[in-house]
Image (tube, rainbow, N blue to C red):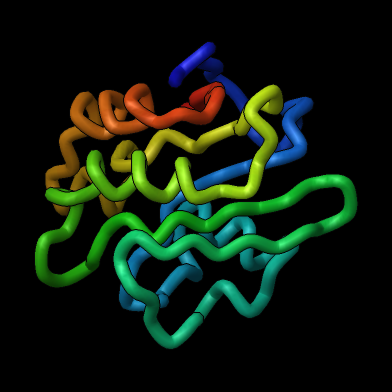
Length: 137
């Protein structure tokens, strides 16, 4: 469920859990995933490929980053993202009373190029059982 929306830098947020989209092909050196891989999680830049619906998590200091494999560069692109983001968020080992900061998926360069339906993605996030604050620039 979405409990708030913020225009700002998620790295400046108070949230201990930060979630964001990555692609199934494993090329995560651009966009927000690229920022995370460059600053905190170098192995994320090229994972060699992952299954749609999979989640990858890494603790970095007091924060845990959660990479949600919820779109493809080839194939279905962002068509399944609304369903996949709901499933991925529900899988995360985050206590029910904690809020997850989530970078809005589909609103970046890849999402625009691949015609992501941001409204449908927001609906998928809203359907999840996790408390979420959406971050967008």
